[in-house]
Length: 217
Ligand code: AP5
Image (cartoon, rainbow, N blue to C red; front, top):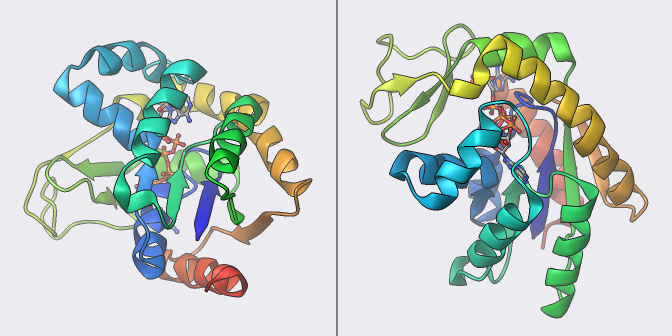
């Protein structure tokens, strides 16, 4: 299956992507994670991306699209993938459609995670991510047994630079202006399924898997 996850910052895309990708046996491809890995390694791509990420703006399309093109060319993505955070605007979606049609494949389904802005702010202010394995935690909603240490690998937890309150507001604005129109773009192709992304993580996963069932196999 070729799936796109869409939803505002903090909707739970990264959290759910892990479970859904494992359920579908496809790789999870997150442009945010790819950019953060480049930032962490200090690559030229990372230095360029960081300027935009720190202010909550989108990284320019040509940089993002080339990175995704390269990743989609990896052998593990041949038979399916889950895209988290890409496409992020209509021009990126159009390029993705063209890229896939050259391979005679297409996006099967776009899963929209629906949450309101107050919930987003609560989630992002308490998010912590593991430096070792990338697992996402929350100090209140999904805490680790020992503060600051990952339950899965024992790695150190950190707070993302772009989770500062002023940057979060900016990311929400960018989402409304540039990413929300993407939902209409895919709805016109009859590909959008929306689910309520509030409540316990396991309940959201169950709703997601139920929503995808008709498109599996
Ligand atoms: P990206 O990393 O994609 O960030 P985002 O879309 O803003 O999404 P987040 O990762 O912040 O949130 P999420 O929905 O994954 O939520 P999570 O699961 O962590 O992008 C970062 C930046 O990179 C962008 O601003 C941009 O600059 C650049 N970029 C990326 N892609 C790009 C593109 N295509 N084009 C251009 N630029 C691009 O959950 C959040 C918190 O909530 C966690 O703490 C979690 O534990 C908690 N939580 C999750 N589910 C629940 C629940 N059900 N109940 C309670 N808490 C929950």
